Length: 416
Image (cartoon, rainbow, N blue to C red):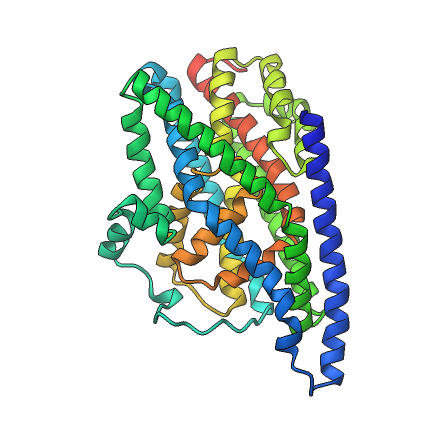
């Protein structure tokens, strides 16, 4: 069954890449046609292509709020009583928070250093609500934005951060209700699986959305925009390499030279994640490898699954990198304080939907809406997302492996 799902995921990635290529070719042809026939209204010709990407984005937004609620509530509940989890749980969460912040902050630094979106020169759509991306948030506005008036109000407006706050309280309360809480949590878990199935259906439409988005972008901007994409990809992978060096340095402080043995041991799961675009595909093999590496079985079985929800280092870096890339593409500079606020928001919102196919796109879509960045900018990412997903999936495996070994060393007092 797992092999079938991996093959299906590989086919989808191939279809997306093919759709991107066809979109680039058709976009280049249409761009030249519009240049030689200025009397033709490009907007009317390209409207069906733009509609493909817009409908896909609306479908993603449709599932964001219920997906965050159900997955985060069940995720909080599955941690159980923190008193019984004890020291391991506390140490694990400390490392996860540190790793998440490091990944997000490094992504923010690198995208500001490289400024990859500066060459896109995309005209932003008209702002109808008077919002402005670089106006920032006051403390009062941020607190009001965090605390929901009601769950239904937050869901209707797709205020993801408010949904997260309600979900955390709801999940924590549900764990104290014994059998009554278990039946409720089982129901929510089933609902989450239904929404995940919906996500799978929606993602099957990704090649169509990619084809439409790439055709529209290339037709309007011209083939020269591909140079900017190449720069974006290279700079992101270079940033991932820096993140790898930071994680390896941290691991070296705990296990010394065994960090090289660790990297050699996990090369197969890393390759699986890279080629399948899925860090989850590497999970079973990684579980066995870390136990054979010498980690305590109980720690591995606790830290590694939790890491797949709370410690996706590669995805974290991509979220800040991509979100700010879109803002740069629209010529919308963001103040440093606003970027830090975005980083803190991402630290919270990204925890609710880890493990979802193309989860980073879902989180980025919610982040753009929160900071009044045009959500149409998601179309810039659809075509190259499979390429980026390969790198971030592999980094997620590395990050969770290092996290497990460090927590084991921290708890047991011996090298893994």
